[in-house]
Image 1 (cartoon, rainbow, N blue to C red):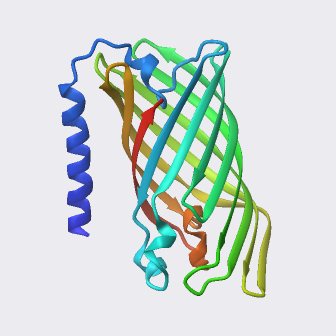
Image 2: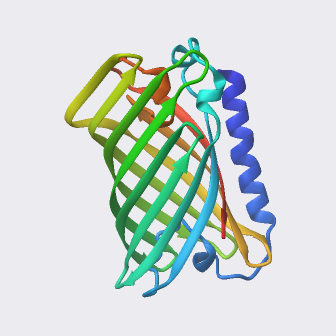
Length: 240
C-alpha cells in the first residue's frame, strides 16, 4: 500500500514538473482535448490513449493478469456551436470492446472553463482462453461534470463521473446470468494535465480514481460482491 501511494505520488510530481518546464507559446486551450472549452462549429479533435489500472487483490487472485491488460482508447469530439459538441469513443483491452456516444455543453469564464455531458455506451466481451468460456454484453450510461483551468503553458481538468448499468447479460459455460433494469454502479474523479509534447502536438497525463461495483474491463473475473471497489488508473494520451 505504501509503495503504491509513493508510485502515484511520484507520477503526479513528475507530471507537474514536466508541465512547468515547457515554454511553448501555443494556445493550450485549443490544443487540449479534455479541457472543457467551447468547440467551434464543425471543429474536430481526436486522441489516442492508454490506461493502466490496479485491480483489487480479491478480484485478481483467481484469474490471469492477461485479463486486465492495458486498455486502449480512441476518443473524438465534433463541435456543434454555441458551446455544444458531440463525443464518441472506442475502447478495447483485446478481450473486451466498448463503444460510447454522447453530447457535452461547455462554458468559459476567463481562465476557467466548465462542462457537463452525458453519454450511453454498449460493451461486450468474450474469453475462451486459460480455461474460461465466458461472454458478456451490456448497455450502460454516464453523466460527466468538468472543471478546467488554463495557464499559459498547460491546462488542468478535474472530471467527475457517475455511471449506471441499464442491463447486463453474462454467460459462463452453460450458466447464464442477467440483470435487467437500471442499477447505480458508482462513480469516479479524474485529474488531467494537458500540455505541448512536441511542435504543436499535445499530450494528456492523469490519474483517475474509480469507486464502482463493476469495472467493465475486468468483467471476466465475474465479480459477485455487492460492494464498491477502489480502482485507480493512470492515463496517458496523445492528441492526434
